Length: 280
Image 1 (cartoon, one colour):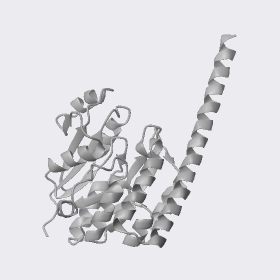
Image 2: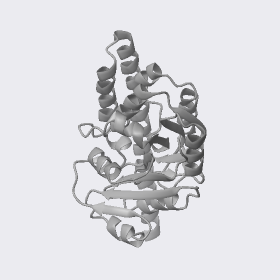
Image 3: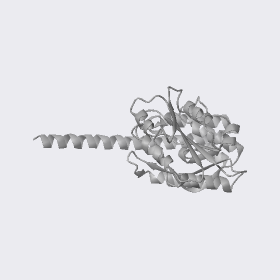
């Protein structure tokens, strides 16, 4: 198999003006011995995103029109791309320096590898690393991949996944009927084609903030993952393990949300008291 000459990154976007410039720069500053095709598929943002995209017009390709959700946007982006390697980076996430070089080097050194993933940090709105214990847990899981383990739990972080175009064409397009867990469904279909490669290094940062899908719709997301599991395996024990894992994760997310709400409440009280003091 020939050396990789082009890698295509797709960013689905909708009203992420507060983050998307950081996302774009994390792609454009990559140094790699291959052409980087960067495509932003915007769903018709009204928050200033278009002004940001216009500033990068000479460096990226972008469209802005109503779509049928993230999966639809991804399929539009991938169908218009030309790279041998494909990936998507959401409009609030980041690639770390050197990521695309590591990915291209891995695929060049492993010509039979159809897809791969690496480690991923979690960050907040100010790019500060958070929830390191979750990251450590996922790294332990990631180091020993199996299809059965993936059926029980989605331990693969979406921003750190890359796949060959040939694998994507075999696996099929992103499922537009899945609004929140389309990545998990695709990983399972790719895993049916072959075991992924694993880069034991940090490739990306996944941003956690109140507007993200994982924060707003985490219950729906994990329920959707359970329904996806049932498409691939009806073993009662495996289904039970998956259901129990979902209940555990949802409980943890709920505690995080309660903690966040408590912090906001304390902050609002402190701010109000400060304003009262200053007004005297």
